[in-house]
Length: 486
Image (cartoon, rainbow, N blue to C red; front, side, top):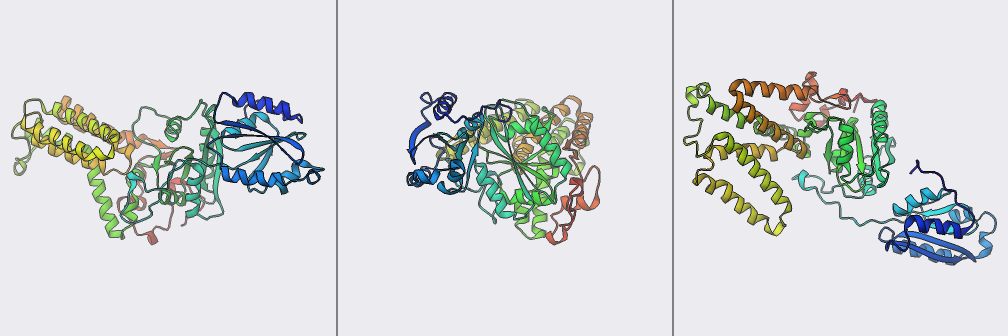
């Protein structure tokens, strides 16, 4: 908006109206409303977008304007209208018609008064919005049931409700030359690293694109840098309590209008494996749940390729574990069975997304019969392939981060292919490359595997085991917080 040339508001109301009508496409756009009115014997005009304005509030303001007398507007008409005759909290003025056009398209109402070289802007916006329901992907047994929605103001309010710190900052900017999408950078000024905040602002300011059709995911691809690396360098959450917990640690959050997901940065690999459920239970129970989750996630990556390797090289199997391996290898090679079942599960996942809720149970039954029992009976898959893939699938679904679960699935496929080609060296080398890849990654200068690489015992202990909250009296050092003590 600031890059556009300035178009000064004139004192001739007809010229201002003609310009706004042309730029807003009045007459071509059915939802852009132009209303000519007259109050206090002054010609006025209103411009607004139907559906983005609270009709009841605007009607009430018009009733107040209808009672204004000519004598009451003598002198500084603009000042009197702003301070006394328009009883609303969010009222401002602007002398740039180009900016006024953009502001109207965001949902505000513009009031043009004859003889005044500024436009009065009334923020009486309302958006179609759903209730703050609990996110489907981040459910907890105990805890808050509210979640972010698609309206940025509601999301910032849910966050501020939990953080009443006077240094909590919600800095507004717009991205997209055409979409002009509202963005909010959120951080606690007394905690977050100022250099990191400044760096993030610079990166966002350098984004030059028409719009953000996929909201926060579009921004993610601009700020993550390495486009072909499947591992996420930011964390997405739809929970206000999770957002607040990260802000207290010194993280920076990005809200995008139109998206119920908030971006948290910088993050490490371990942040994607944490879940609010662990902190809604006693420390010992939470530590147990975390260890189970770690076993499930790492098992989903390594167990299936390892079992495949043991079938390729039976000499690696100890005598006591000689039961490992398929009794009947089926009609097709094991590698092809694994690839088919991986593709089949992705097909099922995509089908479940597009299946109406009323038919979801039927889809599950069909999938269970087709991929499970019938596939085994006809010799397409062996029982062991179904078993180990089920373990991998459970681990994938146990991953709190949807993006990390998909990345781990690609790593599993890569391990299978490498093992099929080079057997034991392929499995070992591919696993090593996987760890080196993670070790070399960074999220805004923060090592992705910290505190494992580089190693920090106390911090790694907190990552490995869910520590009691009273004992977590220090913020993560890697974030370089201004106030390291909790």
